[in-house]
Amino acid sequence: MEDEIITLILENNRFEVDKKRLINKSHYFHCLFSPNFYDSQNKEHIINYDITSSMLQNFIEWIHDDERVLIELCYFIKSSMVKYKTDNFIDLLNLLQLAVLFMADDLISDITDTIILYWLNPEKVIDVWLLAQELAISLLTDVCLSVCLDRFMDLPINSLIELPINNLKQLIENINVRSTTKYSHYVLHEWMDHNTASTINNSIINIPLTKKSKFVQYIIGYKLENLSNKKGYIYCWDGIQLSELIELKYLKCSGKDLIGSQVTGRGFNIYLVGGEYGLGTGQFNQIIWRYCLITKKWYYFGRLPSPRRHMIAGFLSNCMIVVGGVGRHRLKLSSVDMFNIHTGKWAKTADVPECFTEVPHYSIMKKKLFLLRSSLYIFYPELESWKTIILENIPLPIAHHFMAYGLVIFMIRDNDIVLSRISNIQEKICDDCLKLYKDHAMIHTMSNVYPSIGLFIPGIGFISILSKKCQSCSYSYLETDNRTRNNPQELILDPRLGSFDTIDPKTLYEVSILGNL
Image (cartoon, rainbow, N blue to C red; front, side, top):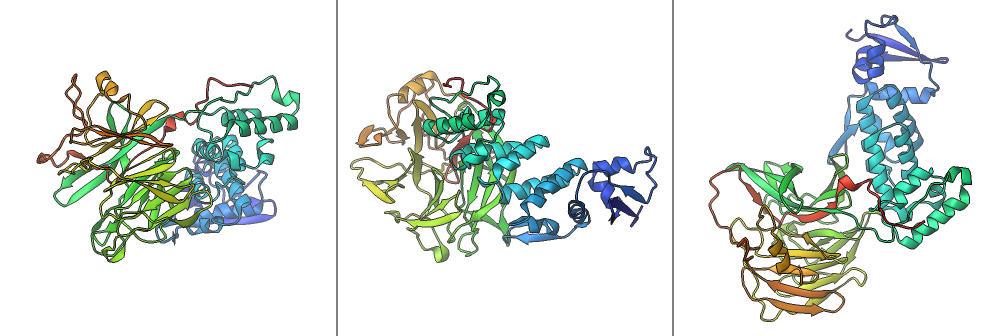
């Protein structure tokens, strides 16, 4: 069947296609041309579906396409998909429908990736969501829902009021929707005014009085495969045990490993930022990669405005903040850049008060960045300024071998203890451990120096720096760890690479059980 050509006939148009490629890339044509079908030996096949010739031509172009084009200097896509990056949106959706019709799984995957990379903006995402739902493409449906939840207040009201009631309920009642109660009521009232009583069909839409997303904590670790090779992994902490999520995206250049990168998270995504390929080489990774917890794939996300390593990277609302670190020629950086992930624009903000060459102790809470060096620095994004808190007579911790930090930071969110930074892990936190810290508000920092000192910051709460050992389980929340690792496969946790949380992807469809009509 080598180089055998089949002619597809659509109305008055004839399209020649490589039969072997067609069979290999489409389950529909694989079955059609199998020996079990009467016309399997025919050289022509009439397409009796209501499709346009341009749709079929685009499909055939993809079938014949073996060329991959380098995009953004970091990833490849088929040359036939390049035209859908910035234009031809309707053609792309039509091609998606044809891919489902002809059961071309690889084409569905290519189109899904293209849509995720370029087309999930507020103006388009609802159309894609409804189509993906209609075509039963579950991954694309889920990704679109996650974007709608995140950008709910940016979605066009004209699109929202046209939604079927079940789709509107999925948004408004979801615990993860980013919306004020007032705005949710506004959307609901506009939708009810626009739709008839028969459309509503006695359905009740509950608007949660309070919304509380469920979060999962992550930390970066690595395993030594041999003396010269180590692999990084993202680990998930559920409050009881640590489990491996995925291998960290492998980035290497000229045989050099990526050093000084940061990993952070927001929503249903994890981001890998910056780093240098070997210290002092001057070869930096300026690409930001995004790992989608729904599709379980890495995607290109953006580029840093300037190269840097060993910086702080995190999220303040919908802005990624990148602070300090080391740039070209090993220069210490005081600059702070913020990237609005919704507008795709970078902006400069106030320089960090104190430079650093290793990632310092830091935490993000209440939409503010806390950075601990010789003093405690707090960044207020709404003011674009730093506040300095002098920590007098507070002994600062010392980092030890195989221990990334001499400091562990816990955050309090709605009276729940949330693990923000991990130094050493115990399999289970006993009740007395929780009681030990339950009375401390906002941030708990524990060093291997015993004194407990409380410091009240207006508008923030108490900052407590302390170290205590649980009397029940004798677990010290910060133990020096300078043991020699004899097992090269042993896991080594490194919070300096990243310690963060995301929304639990298992709760994508979870709704609040409390609310009002």
